Amino acid sequence: MTQQENHEGSVAGDRGRLTRRSYVATAAAALGTSALAGCSGSRGQSLEPDVPDGVPKTVETQYWREWETIDADSPPLGYSATAGAVLDRLPVEFSSEDDPWMREHALMVKRGLNDLGIAVTLNDRPLNQLYAQSWATKGLEAVISMSTHGPDPQRGLDPNPLLMRRTKESLSNYDNYYHPELQEVLTEQEQTTDRAEREELVDRAQEIFAEDVGALITLFPNIVTAANTERWSGYVKTPGNGPTKDSFVWTEVNLQPETDNRTYVKGVSTSMNSLNLPWAAGGAEAKRLTFIYDGLFDATPDLNVVPALATGGGFVDETTVELTLREGVEWHDGESFTAEDVKFTVELYQEYSSSSQVPFYEPIDSVEVLGDHEVQFNLKDPDAAFMTQRVVRSVIIPKHRWEDVDNPSQHNPDAPVGTGPFEFEDWEQGTRFSASRNDGHWMFDDDWRADALGDQAERGPGIERVIWINVSNVDALIGSLQSGSIDAVGTTLSTLQADRAANADGIEQLSAGNYAPLDGKLMFSCPLIRDKEFRVALAKVVDSQGFVEDFLQGEGTVPAGENPISSLTQWHNPETTGYSYDVEEARTILERAGYTWDDSDNLRFPNGEAWGAFVDRIQPGNTHKRRSELNQPDFSQ
Image (tube, rainbow, N blue to C red; front, side, top):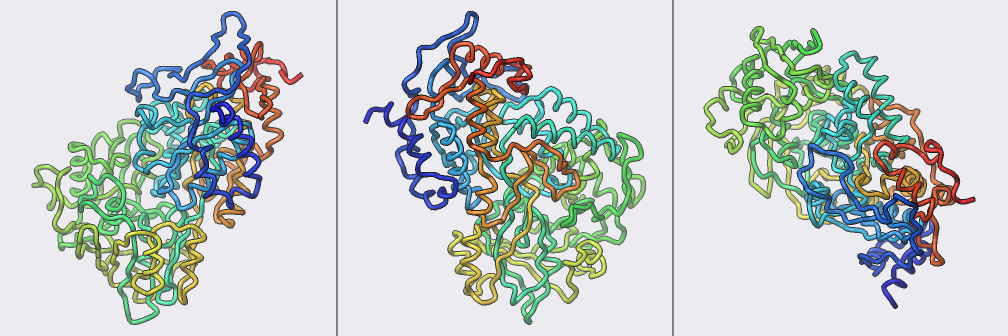
């Protein structure tokens, strides 16, 4: 078989195998086929290019505008568009480490592209590679890159972490997306401290992004895990975190023992590398050590901001925030907590560039102590998110423990001291971490917890300590749970894995909703992606609802259109454009835009006058307009 025959046959063959409901059954087999190995460089049998005067025959992937955040001479992605040519294989990347079902999700996206007549190369990357800046790194080329956003509190409390990454200044704008109206709206809402005015702007931002297909926002996957509900009651269904993961501490302060044992053991598959939370690189230490420390405010499972070390306050003008601090709080070593600790914390983070606390301290110009338990933040500019994500993300450290540390970024406390609901007890790197109850903490007050958790609150003696045990893999975690060695799995499971764990007596599958979407980033330096006609067609061939129903067994929510803001949050706009699943309509859209198919059903770029129209659509200023808005004809006639 020639390379050309292999290229053409792969699309037709994939389309024949992966019918609307068969991709689950063929997932493992499909990943092993030669069709995924790639035919790099082959465009198939092309028509003779028919190029209008003044129009280039080929358009390469390129930076179409100056990007301050990109330090590269040219994009590493070599995906080009040529008049009348069959599309090259489309590189699509994911990481099976990201979620247990991510491989099958990638196959679902592949199937949609196959339905359009596009061959696909799937690249399953290590998670650390997937999160690299692939637009500037050779070997990490992808036209579509899919991943789930982590469940940090900031991503549900405020729209900025998911929306501001779409601005030209964001270091997280890996896909080079730029929409002039969206840029203007997002910049304005970022500095609008009036809640009602800001909500209108955020609603508009969601409408613009969804209508433009700025990314493939396929679903909000439920957080599924398993735990022993015979030994313990009081698991809290926290969105984005689930009942047993570590970004929130609600389950651990709410759990009530059903036996005499008050030590709660959680199995995890990732280990901590240090005890230095402010300069943590993320991951396990950035989560488990939050049990030791408090922030200024906290977030409830309903994503309401509630008091923590600060009990009240807010903006007194657009760049000034005054907070009242909780009195009577002691650090775990018995020293009193005061406003001096807050001032010292911010200034230390600023001086030594705390890696994990940038979202908190970045907008602060200076801090003033107004009293033993009063503090004032002077902001560099108006910052609408300061009293939501930033204060919740904050971690306050004790001045008397850190003021004599020579190099805070390299410091590894022997025993970290905080004010949090749990006190450090022991750490064996790669093996276990344990923390004991801080009995005087407000989270262990039954009445306070009832106000924060509502119907999910439990009353009783609670737990005495939490122990995290490192277990090698998911199978071992499930075995440990079923044998009683651990009480809960502290990571996300697939529904199949959770069902398997729940086969044992006393074990139950637990699930919670999510405000962190699965984001299919589209590389907007690529000519194909710049064509809005193609993006709309792509949105219509991704069967997210079928995937949620058939593979996730209903454990997920499909948004109404490409909207990254979940309906679980207070910022969600339900009135966004949705491009419903319809393969034939998607192909009609492409046909009208001038795309054609060869005898083997491989998609070709437009040719002739239709090629001129394609090149016009992908120019700066036109990438957010449909064919009709540019007064282009229907090329299917």
